[in-house]
Length: 395
Ligand code: AMP
Image 1 (cartoon, rainbow, N blue to C red):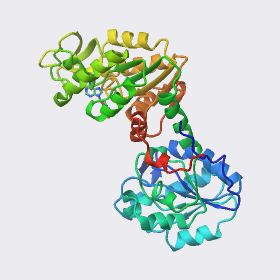
Image 2: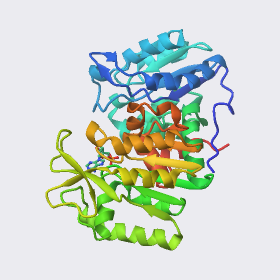
Image 3: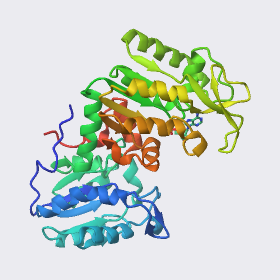
Image 4: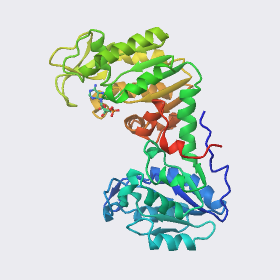
């Protein structure tokens, strides 16, 4: 069980606290178009300010290769000031930790906040370089990581910096992710069902392997299901197929049988001759014709999956059941989201596409936890140690 030092375990009064947040928000003409991530960061920031910490916020935004005004965090500082109801000083340094940042950090009083410029303005950020890690650490007495979305990467602002700061804790957001994802996988209330979908088997090999050791039932839908169907001897026409992974799929089905894990794949699919929302479609049971492709799970499969989920106590879902971006092929993903919404179980949605699907379809509120990190949540499900989590002090 991961037991990391949290912000409830540390004293911050009068201390400079560097907080790595996830302020990677979408911007259009300098305006923030979705502030969910800013709002999600508030509890940690407010707690540190209320305790009398001198809060120095930092984050990356987009993927600039160096200083680039288009990716400045200035709009974030302004909006955060409004959300917090107090000024967040913006330290506009192209080097992130430059004269402005140093001066502001020095003058910061208890309960005041400032924000550094986009950490990606320093190209060493993504290489976990020593100089930038030390620069960041030089501003702070305490480090808090609250950016789960980058926890699967070892960068200066979440990993390198921890080598040069004595006290490193996790914030509330990060704690929540660790608690839900970690608990679900390592200590689930059973029956534990995992649902995997999305386009590729190849991107979820380790997830499948790891989950087969943990779950009672594994449900496979979406584009990746066709490789499993083909491995079982069914024709899949023009559907997504990863021929290199047929043996792997067969091996996983065999492994499931040996372990007594119920592995379910679609028994019918919605097929069309073109990859287009308006393409005429039909439900195929059994073989798919050579000129057809499967774009969603069929109604029988929806019922099969719902039955398998009925008595679940823990459910983890990663990846849509079909091409949910096209309304005519979203029914399978909607059906699974609806089923989950009606369960009295712990329901955890991996980040990325599944989180987008659940929110877009209006079921966000009904889930126990929707992860904020796509790649990071996937690596958690793979059973990997996330560098950003590992770098925080243990309790
Ligand atoms: P991933 O990024 O691997 O989680 O996959 C998500 C993508 O898989 C979404 O954009 C879906 O449209 C796509 N997808 C799901 N099912 C299918 C399918 N049957 N055929 C093609 N793409 C699919």
